[in-house]
Amino acid sequence: MLDLIIRNGKCYIDGELKDVDVAIKDKKIHQIGQISEEAKEIIDVNGHTVLPGCIDTQVHFREPGSTDTEDLHSGSRAAVAGGITSVFEMPNTNPPTSNKKEFQRKLDLAKNRMYCNYAFYFGATADNSDDLASLKDLEGCCGIKLFAGSSTGNLLVAEEDDIDKVFQNSSKVVAVHSEDEAILKANKKLIKEGDVHTHPVWRSVESAISSTRRIVRIAEKYNKKAHVLHITTKEEIDFLSQHKGNITFEITPQHLTLNAPECYDNLGTYAQMNPPLREKSHQDRLWYAVRNNFNETIGSDHAPHLKVNKDKVYPSSPSGMPGVQTLMPVMLNHINNGKLSLTQLMKLICENPVKIFGIQNKGFIREGYDADFTIVDMNKTIEIKNENMESKCAWSPFNGHKFKGTPTHTIVAGKIKMQDGKILGDPEGSPLVFA
Image (cartoon, one colour):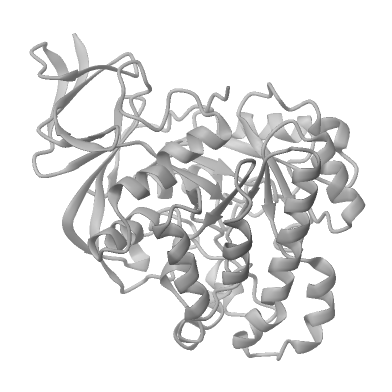
């Protein structure tokens, strides 16, 4: 007997929406088409779109360390509440995930506590190059995270020689927080206390493009893969669009949706993130990259902080905002507004992550693949409310915004983990497997 049949949905299969049913058995997609067998459970999703399980390739779940703000359990609840079936979690925890012992600790902490599937980044430091060379077959490791500019945590690798060493020794994709630390230091004198509008002045366009040029030069020197995270400037878009192949890059939903100065007028320090939200001319260029398929991924950069800390006077307020629960509603709303197509979104949050990082059996609705699905209602309008956020930080920069298009079901390994906003069952997520 089958475990589950998804009936009457429009299934996104190889770039087309098809009127087929999907049968699930033993955590795998067993059959696609007209299904006559019996099943333990059948869900009718008439009027809904059945997508492959969506992947958020940049989240900070704060464990170990700041578990009052978030932990692997609460972060994974936020993920499945937002239709996300797999996450890549970041290493700037306390202590940082920058050696094999801490990496194993992360895997142990995740076991039977996360609702979604997961992989972890291994943090690069100035002196762990031996470890970086031996990560190829490390279970649950999606890549290496390099902080070229300072942000939350203490994983900074700022000197060119050290960055060079990271790439030279890397055995996985190197995902980069790309800001030039020397420029950030020199610009500190431009910070006006109490004025968060000076955040993008301090963390300037120059600091971003200078760092990104250096990262690409070093990665190309060693013919290594670099994935540049949360791109914010038109200068970087124009530069990166000329360097493809081993160089890929990400844009966040926040940078596509909020812009300066309005975001700082409306949200104050709650709009503060690194790299910063910038003026509309930069945002327009980000959309140009999305429309023309220059960028490869959309990641939420879910980086929660408690309100008590965000309420501090700038620049004592921390940078970062939650986003894993709102990634899908924000991007589906953009589809409904004609900003991008469903096919483009599926490349950005399903197919390209699989291709870039070598994730096994995910990202497509195909027989034999893992039974992870994000089922969405493209016509349902929801209002984001702080009180509905699953993150421990209990707020969203999109509080009060209405979005058309929302996930209605999240299915992980053939089991329904979210239905109509309610989280179901036990946390049974498992580590992602990489080629």
